[in-house]
Image (tube, rainbow, N blue to C red; front, side):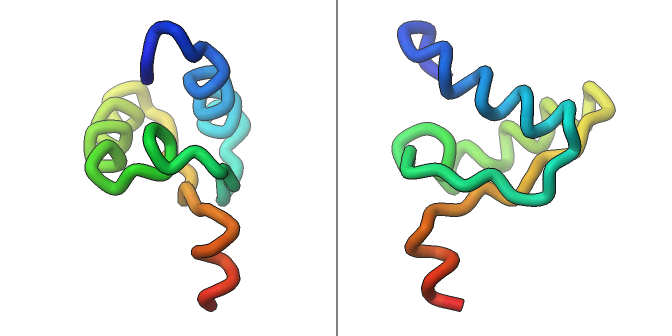
Length: 63
């Protein structure tokens, strides 16, 4: 997560600690970026945390 946008990191951290199943976001650049999801999952596993499924509203509408 970028240093200048602490809200993204906080949003994800709260979702992981609270063990939510889904994190709904409009932020495709950082949170819903598939290229970053593997990295986030690895970090969370090392910390003993679950990674929520990060989705955008469009992803939900497709189902």
